[in-house]
Length: 463
Image 1 (tube, rainbow, N blue to C red):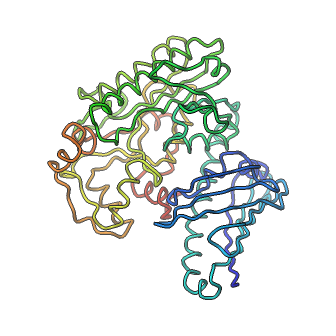
Image 2 (cartoon, rainbow, N blue to C red):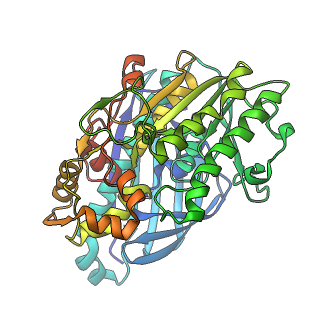
Image 3 (spheres, rainbow, N blue to C red):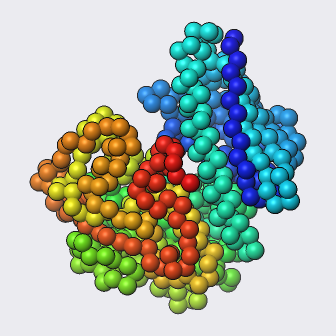
């Protein structure tokens, strides 16, 4: 067996107790998992203390592997160790080491001793690739650790909250729930399934008007993200669901919150920049008029449905979210396979403006809206630098080292998606700016398209 050693460290501007405590909280494991491998937690028992167990299903390209890990050698504020009991490596021992670096800073060191299968042959064939993969993964992990701790430190003076989330299992909701948990907040997940602690804590069925007010008594805040996907084909049934899932769900939630004896301080309710409609090159901020199309009408009704909560004295934020970029879901996950094959291309004439935001910054912005008492009303959740579809295509292709020679004619998109869906989604032009977030002092960690893609795809170069 040929043993290899991988070591990376990072200095973090928080006391060692804070850094270690972040790792002990429930959401840390999910926050640190590299999203491009689509890891799925099958079992996680016992946190990071001795005897804790983790079972993962990891998708590495076309190959899925199962990892069975066990924790040992826990010493508070100094270390914990995870050992692979079953998985793709012949040997794997990962020691997480923590040490103080003065009173207000600390150092995290990840030290891994591992061996590849098939002995010397496996080492010769896969050793360099494994080291490069680990370097990519731990660069991302350390960036997430630094970023999350910085966001939580900004509001360390504020009390920790009990936060209810709808859509907590979704593309944005799941990492948001994990992020809030690592910050010491108590997350209550509202979902359609039966109550399963840590998965669904409160059951609701908006189409039947089912949501028990007693289950929400005592929550300090609510983040409402549930709604049918705009990316699915707009059949007549799905088109109706796009509206009903947003308007009826929001109305039920707002009326329920208004009836509570102890109401939450804030409702951050999902919305979308689709409210503005397609407006060509015009720069759109939160004061811009709404459009006149179907998606605009849905978004206006969606926001209006929060009125009962606002009348009851709850601070309401309408999170008008742009195109959220993340490797594990959303539009980017659908585009990546095509671009990696070298067949990604410009949509229509490519002149339409798109307004993206990194998933990491979208989570940070929702947290910012949650914690800032002076933020209310419409807030555009987009990066500062909108760009055209052609520029987006070029940026993604260049980062993946692939050509982008193809163009998909607008007519072909209208035939494939239906005229209305094509015109209001992939061909719509929305040049949106985050004026409210910028004026309030929100820190965009990934302000440009290149920075967004580098971070979310683990390609390095973003802070």
